[in-house]
Image (cartoon, rainbow, N blue to C red):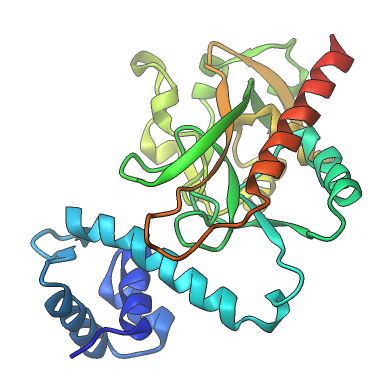
Length: 302
């Protein structure tokens, strides 16, 4: 048997969903059929890709390495067969939330002026790598440590450190309190956490004042996070980029003391040798332009 694109898509769906059952639902195929497809791929490669010995499905070391190659191969095929990408070849910039903050619009406008023949697409992808590991984007704005520790083959450029902010309901006691707020100020309130692509976890709070897990609301994206806070159901923590990109009449942002700043980076995939994929040739130009835009803003505010 020779493995084909169908096997790669099946494996990537399993890796992303974290279970054969969920992946089968996404692919609209039966669980036994998907399990057979995975076994066929493992037999073809001669390695075990998925560790089935634990309650929660996990990739083996070989599986994590192969995920990189599979994602690259599928992305190449999808791009080649997409008639919308024949000409011109857009550069896809991914982000999970808030992009580059206040620098997002200047970057998009400058790019259009300087490189009108290469469209720049800003795509929100609700996962921790903003679509980078799945091949949905060419380059992504990510905030450390959102990239998984086992992610390999990635390159990056630091852009800036973002101060953290507290997001509280408008009209609340916390909104009226003199800034800055502290983690202790928030600890007695329900905390809204973006459990899909967010950066904030309860580990941000020191052990002595750390909220209980039961005192949290899990949301899937920034829109739901803002909705929970505006409704008065919770408070939240993000970076200044969210305050810059998502003003909301029901949410007040306040500086947050005692919490480390968050590095903002541009990251892209390292092209594997022999993969046949050059990567998007405009990636270096976007990195250079982003650094220029941030440097100009810094000089303007100095």
